[in-house]
Length: 414
Image (cartoon, rainbow, N blue to C red; front, top):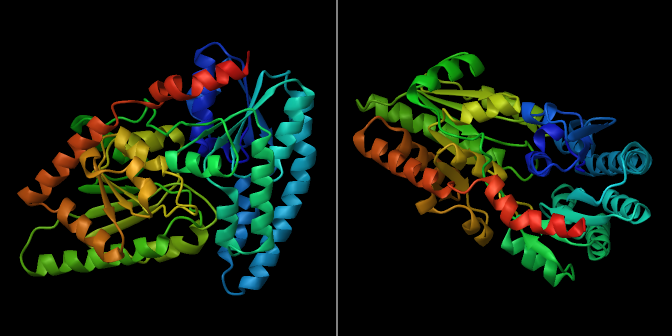
């Protein structure tokens, strides 16, 4: 169960597919979204779509910055309304529409009210409750309110209370595991995200037809910025970096250097897209083309396979989670420039693993200039990073799942 768009909740979808591959019957619960074809055609998976849309939920208050107090009140009202609806819809699905489960696996955040409902449903049906921790919900709420807000403290206490009553858990990083353990949540196992098998580099012959189909044109240099358009992505930094890059490209051309045109594609959808989309459109120039597009899961995987470089502007609300979309890029052997938000990132992003870190807009612009040029040193640097990215992603999601997640889920079902 995930209180998110099923089409944009890959970790939970991958859980479902891995279980189905072992002959396990899976009921996948979430909001309606575009699912990979593998899920739609899998006889062991039954999807249960909740009413409403996650993209029109409480997060939308973040797009009204002019009156912060009014935005906070609106957000809290929307969150309360959504929680009340879920208090009706989730028990109906968990207790009536689905057969009795052995295990209830729930993604958190969000934690309110889902953890309490999942725990109660599991106990009433003699099932085990496993929580897959992606982050701390209290940290995400603090982005919209402030760290000392009573609601933030309430969510923090809620997560700890119900987390201690679960039968086990998974989490995305060792740093998050240590944090949860310190808070009294025992039996939490690290299961890091890894790229799924469908993410792979495409050959030169495959690249042009794919770009022509999904973008409408073939790109000289393609940079992909995967995003969920949430408040823990730093779009202001990205805007400034692309502006600096365009100016540097113009300066290089005036100095007689050859600079290939660069196409930057921001993928995905989410609450902040409406606020920023027009600002990215305004960056267009002869050397820089910026597109904001949503792709189906299969087209998204194909597009990554044609990219020259990826950018992650995920800042992490808690400093404890890892950007899964970096794994997708590395799986397609795409080098990544990742925003450095703290020590936790070292669990995923390393220069010898195809990743370069940056901290400021100027740093990112310099990385782009140094990697996307038409000169031999730039091509050599990019080629070296691509080789490192391919080597770093040799272990795939299915391999890590069998090693780290399946033993916990299998034991919980006994």
